[in-house]
Structure formats: structure tokens, C-alpha cells
Image (cartoon, rainbow, N blue to C red; front, side, top):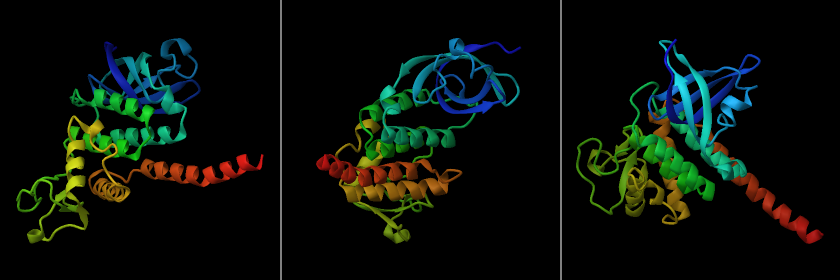
Length: 264
């Protein structure tokens, strides 16, 4: 039987299996993304103690063999973020971020040591605010850590560097800005927006977009990122649509709630 090891992790997915078990996908600090069988997880409160709930930093005891699915012996919560689970909008933002992690981080490979702290910081920021900028910035930082970030500094065709602080044309298929001499791209990124998106790819991602962009710039950033992901990630991510739907529901509900209060 493979020896167990203890590692910090976050839950990416949990699926019921049989009458009492779960198959869970964790992003671990030591082994990257792994699939594990958690025997008796749906019955045992002692061995897992709430650690298989989403949006928490956990400590997991795992054993990996030669097969695709290892074993989760036990787990405990190191840090919970209850404010996320208490708010539908925050939950939808966190879910969108975790979905992107599942689609971009490879399985059983040497993980970037910055990944887990970045996800934990993402939970921390989302718990305090569900602003869309948080998801945009986190997505870009995650792509950068996985070596998939868009090129926002030089033409993806001729390599010519774009002047700092100036607008550029982004081509999602190329994953880069493209100068006019090489045909340009369909999405114009203003100088301020391009600088903020570039900063979001860095370790300062959590301060890159907050309050800096107008609604029109946010819309452009969202369109550019969605188009990039649809080209460079295996499938189109659905959770971003959920964030939008939740906000639309809230906007539709608020006027009715105010009217109801006024009628009392």
C-alpha cells in the first residue's frame, strides 16, 4: 500500500460515489491536482470534519499509487472562508475562479508553489468583496502562473514592443496584442486598461483592478478574457455566465424589495 503524506490543499470538485464514499479532486501543495477516493466521507464526521466543503484551505493526508485515483485518508480545515458560503454572489465568483483552476492546472505535476497561496488570497478577497474585478484579476494571475497568460506587451506576430501607456489591439486567437502593421486585432485595449491587465498577471494581481476601471473598460476586459479563454482553454467556462445571471437577478429583485417595503 502506498505511503501517505500530508499536504495543504483546496477542494476543486467532490462527487458522491456509492452509498458512503466520495471522489474528490484536490489542488495540493506537494502534488498538484489529484483525484482521490475518500472512503466513508459521506458518513464520517471525524476523519473529514467539514474539510470537503468548498472554499477552504485544508490539510490533507493522501496516498498516491500508480492508478488515476489515489486515497484520501483524512483531512481538516486550516482556514475557512464562511463569508463566501453566506452570499450567493460571492459564491458564484469563487465558483468561477475554482472552475478555471480545474481547467488550467495539470494533474500530478510539480505545482508552482505560488498557486495555493494565490487561491487562498482569492478566497480572502472574495469574502470581503464580490467585485467582478477580483475574478478578472485572479483569472489573469492564474493563467500567468500556468504559463498561459496573454501577451500584452509586444506584437504576437512581429515582436514589436507596444509603447507603454498606449492603446493596443488584442487578437484572442493569437493570445497577444497585434500591431496595425501585422493586421491588428478586434479588441482595442486602452493604455490604462492594458497596464492594469498586465499588473493582474503579476504578484500584485489583488490590487491591479480594484476601482481603477470604468464600466466600459471592465466590459472590454471581460470580452477580451472570455474570447482568450474560449481559444486557449479546453472548453468555454460556464461559471462566468452564472456571475452575470446572479447580478441580473439581484438587480431585478431589488426594486421589488424596495416597493414591498414601501407598501408596508
